[in-house]
Length: 490
Image (cartoon, rainbow, N blue to C red; front, side, top):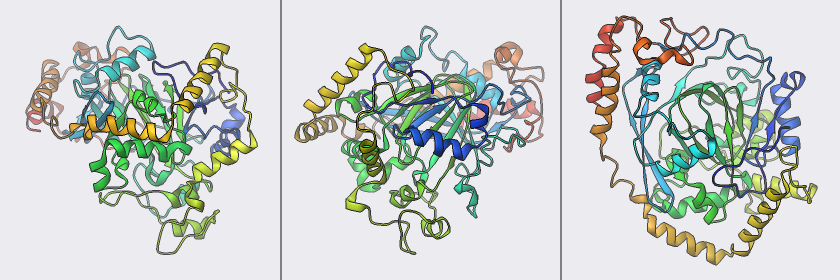
């Protein structure tokens, strides 16, 4: 286990810290066993997410990433975030026309979208992100079906992790098949748990870091109550509105209302694993590429049975839990016509697990969450934080504070400013691509200095073993000449 994660600008409030694991080559050889027998056996799941640093010998892609420039991002989204000073925001996605990775990288590294030059540390970037969240909407290349991991990579390959989810008769994109995510500065993944409260795994192939926030699963219901207070109209329309992945609550807001959380920075070459019913969110610190999918274990079955489902969107993921229980068993039974079962005494499986863990380890020493003692000063600060929370956390006071902030937010005046500067943003991004003269047949990266870090713009065919869509074989010049007009027509 690694040392404690570096402190973020908004210190965590959770007594359960996010752990970092560094498996040996032998431990890394069995994915499912490492998750259950090492991570969960040592309580790494209790924070909601953990980080795994693979052995140096492991390479997901032997050929590197230089030949990916013509890969297609079929439906990039412009993310508009609106909200109030209370710290509650809603995200609006605008679907754009397809871009190649070369074009996306050009936008990400332009003056309009590049990360602030003077923010060199994760803490500075975090402060800048929350200070400018509603300004200059980023573009996110999310949910691109496919993988850039070598097909013959036997270890931790998201095409086949060898878990319970691989046995499903149906293939669900992004659930039991991989998705790629191409990020730029401030592109955001709002608070959510995974579909059906599954596990997930995320690997950062290259580029800038991802900043993650997580709420312990045992506090998931508490987090939901806070979100419902701020977004009551959304709750009325869909009890599972957080599955829409549009709600952003700042860490300061969580701290103010006593919702425990922790944070961690994921860097190139590192994994993040999220656990059942672990609410998480985050943002990208610059141009990057990540790969992700879901997985499951027998431990997940009770979480799947208790999952709150979205019924308002036709593409919501629903897994037949009755079939899962019949095939794999589990700690619970469910009716054949339902995915649910009654929860014992109304308590969520995560709450029951946390209570059981607390009984087994009632006096967990400071620092045991990351394998090494934290400095004494940090231990004192953590103790003071817990004391302040407990002394100011009377339910009546909390409810009053939530109501006060929620009234200020008024659902964050979501729709009021949704269309503000839409045309200006489209024109701005189109001008970036037009000025770069990407329609020239010559190497476009020469003027844009695209190949500086990753040589992504080499004029190669699609990546070896990458199961993702690529641009048609129409002449690049003709396609690029129309790019400006296509962006303006959005």
